[in-house]
Length: 374
Ligand code: GN1
Ligand code: MG
Image (tube, rainbow, N blue to C red; front, side, top):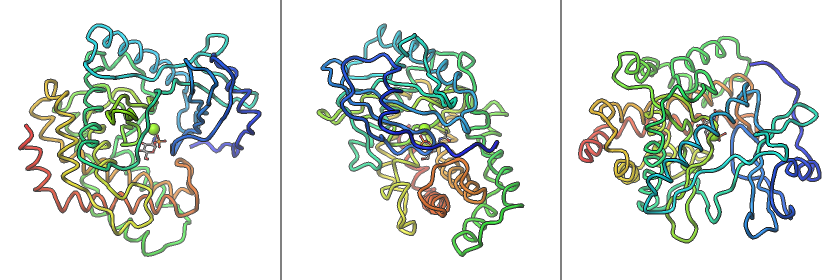
């Protein structure tokens, strides 16, 4: 990864000036950091206009997304397609898609004097998101949301969207990167690190499972969200129902199994992925059941026999993969994910590995519940 100068946080005045580059109504009354993204910097812009109360302003991390204009191009293709679909067949409940907000001159992004890349997205009014699921109804809604997302893009040909992040979710590649970084790392050894290294060593052979199924034609290339973790589902505050899936940076060709796995690994971990108590982390099969019920209520019609056959592998693999990515970044000196302290990525890796162990220990239960839902 190319090294870049450390990017400072903009002042409030600078942020207001940047937000004003984008077409919006009313005046900006407040600006605050928003969400808990690990890559981009996100701000919520509060406006004093009844028709447009908020705007989401983001600085794209171009060390990760090296062709940000492709993200915007994909977003526009995706949102246009989904808007058409929703118009043709209006759903029987609230469902919205975040819209790209153009600049005053009609561009879909704005570059500041330092070359930093900014964009604005509409805020789904009256919604909130959660880092963990509180009950089976919410979990069912998360599943419904992912199903709805997949359903709405199921007829958009994968080659209509660009690959915005090459190698994303290709687990064997992450394993190669890990091995390359581990060979020359200088971070201090500690018992937690040794546990993680042993953990990866013992599961190297797992890494190929989904990519092999793709090569063998068992799992087709489709469009995926790429990052449908639990807090990317927006819930209507009044009804408590899912109303949108946000964070569209990684909508691109891939396997829907990456999405299903990511949705389940993030939603079925009641301790959340940022917990410091990694020993307490476990995978909750009842939440998994509710999520899959919600998902299948929308997605059943486009899933094949093989799609079901690889669901368990997907849950285990994506959890393992995220742990591997965090671990690699710890060894590399925290160059990819934002961190609050030096051992943050190691702590995150421990959480995902513990979750993987819990998934493995409950393999029979999880496989049975998948079978019973068919
Ligand atoms: C990153 O930035 P954020 O939080 O939306 C990462 C995902 C991980 C996630 C873990 C482009 O997403 O793959 O699953 O952190 N996004 C990218 O929280 O690498
Ligand atoms: Mg994301």
